Length: 222
Image 1 (cartoon, helix red, strand yellow):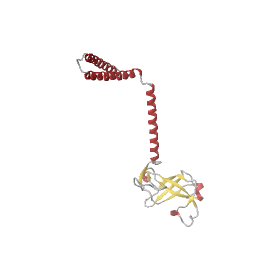
Image 2 (cartoon, rainbow, N blue to C red):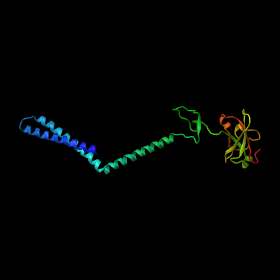
Image 3 (tube, rainbow, N blue to C red):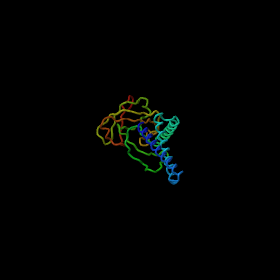
């Protein structure tokens, strides 16, 4: 506030000096003691000083009286427009982001930047960083006796000993036995996909894709 008052007072002093000099030169022009051009130059200087004084007074009034309502309204509209643009950009960004449902490691990216994947293609292969799990298929005859949380014993090819685990997922819809699990007795039987978590810290170091056997500890399971 004090700085604005000082600028106003300084501009007023400059304006007063310029006006006095203008009036003096105009009086001399009437007596043919100075040229008209010199008086005109001083008249322009006085006009500029008057404009500077007006700007300084307006600045001081704004500080004393506060921002005018129309300025507040324009600022509010500008803020709303900026917020709308930000929301639009955030929505666009969210549509372009792919988020994994849990903590994972990116194992492979089949496509390079600029390539266009076909519909339904795999764009990223992810490996879960938590406890590994085994994907198995529960035969239809024992499906009714198997529950999520039931314990299981896992034997992994090439790894000595066994691992303990438990069922964390069990499908409710049946599917046909996958080709790599087919035998003569199972070709026409339905199965239910299940995921068995392998417990223990040692299991965290197991690589993905190992063949294994799972022995379910559910009542009625063979």
